[in-house]
Image (tube, rainbow, N blue to C red; front, side, top):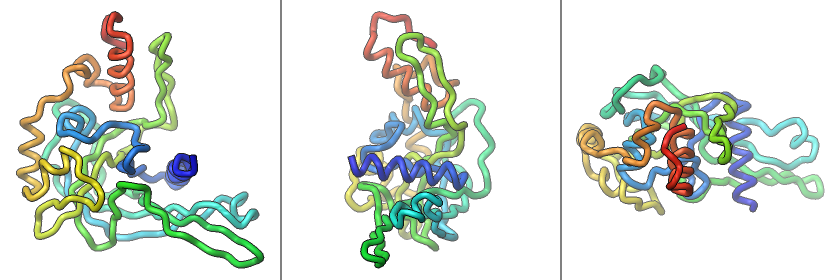
Length: 236
């Protein structure tokens, strides 16, 4: 429960700061990204990014009055040229993004303030001055579908979101510490261009075929509903 609470705190801090949620946290992600099929189904672009800055998102006024809470670590990412783009219309890619990437748990006891660095399990640490290969998608991760009516309730609004990210070394992606998904293993050691070509040759999940023009979060929820209720005709 503590990890869920912290993950929610990261998301709330991110929404307040108008930044991008970095979703690859080893279990709390809104969209699947373990396989290249996942990448081709829910990703929009594959790009190299460079971390240029970091700052702290202060605790809320309520947390400050209590002397305990969470300060998100916000990083700035400069975006390079895409090496893969999913076909069809997409939102314009910005020159840079701000993204939540870990943070600090703050506690005050007997008047003494302490802080503990937190990085969600499996999340790639984005260090200033370093380059990464990132899979981005434009989505409203807070959108919800009613399973009975199949109607969509919009959330906080769509934004560019990082689905997965690998550190680069000598121009080639390397495996993030503690994570070895099939997608990460497939692109590790290749150039960013080769990784893009590999993704271009990957077929999206056929179960999502009827939903590829929809928001990726909505797309995923519809495919899950179809799997749970296979007798229903696919479609919104």
